[in-house]
Image 1 (cartoon, one colour):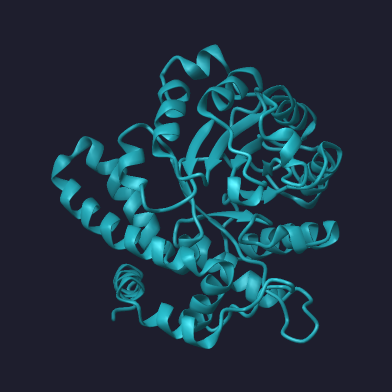
Image 2: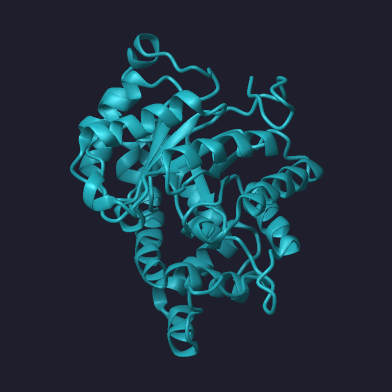
Amino acid sequence: MTTNGTNGHHSISRPLKAGIYAPIPSFFLPQSEDLDLPSFENHVVRVAKAGVGLVLSGSMGEAINLSHNERATLIKVARKALDSAGLLQVPIISGIGAGSTRETIELSREAADAGADYAIAITSGYFAGALANNRKALKAFFQEVGEKSPIPVIIYNYPGASGGINLDSDLIVELAVDCPNLAGVKLTCGDVGKLTRIAATVSDSSFSSLHPRKNADAPFLVLGGFTDFILPSTFVNGHGAITGLANVSPHAAAKLFELSVASLKDPSLLPEAQRLQGIIARADATVAKASISGTKYLLEKLYGYGGRPRKPLPPIESGPAEALWQHSHTQDLVHLERELSGKGH
């Protein structure tokens, strides 16, 4: 059972499962830059109903630009929206990235109190010059956060957001073995070889018995950070992805994962999985180049909400925005999403 939002009392069990997760954007009102909670609620429910999990206050959520109180507010609002929509079993993962180990742990406790089921932590890039090649310090960070967090913690490996710090597969496996409150890794380094090496250890049938987790609901998952290698990662016992593209096309991303897993047992499904992977991989590369502002623009075009990032992050300019929308890779994805969501073309 997961403890969350109830002062340590056991609440409903929301297991962490293999699949697709979307790092949910934080939406802001155009003049004040205050949180746009109605758009956030709408999006959380839309994504969850498509069978995609939720990660709040990550890179896509502009966590670096959010206060502690805003992060807690997003958790509370998301939980209420999910419960009101009958999605009581959908877990919430919340980002706890911060400058110091102390603040990261503080955020983990605040996230648990607000109702988060799991946390995801990234190493601070501010002192990357001192940390990047200090294996002992990097391991100590995740060990301490894992030990002191009241909820299971996912390792977030994203060199682009941590000053180039790039955890290697050996260190991640060591952490999985030594830290029973660590519940997985997100690899936004895009390194398929690294994913393969980690999965070879943690997905082995003996791992869970030799190295049981502190929380039985939280196995150690190996998740990609993009949707462009869902199919190959499934065939090396990966567990899915936390991917920004799932905000734009949640049905397509979820279907690709479903087909990838099914094709392990039924090879006749492989050609269709490959077709979807091709469409999604091309779109992922195209949309990722436009970053957070591009994703928000596409949400605005498709669903009527999105808005601008919080300053100093600039909005996408009109020319590149229109080019992104008109790009054949984007349009192919939009058509696929509409087909799979029952909305037609």
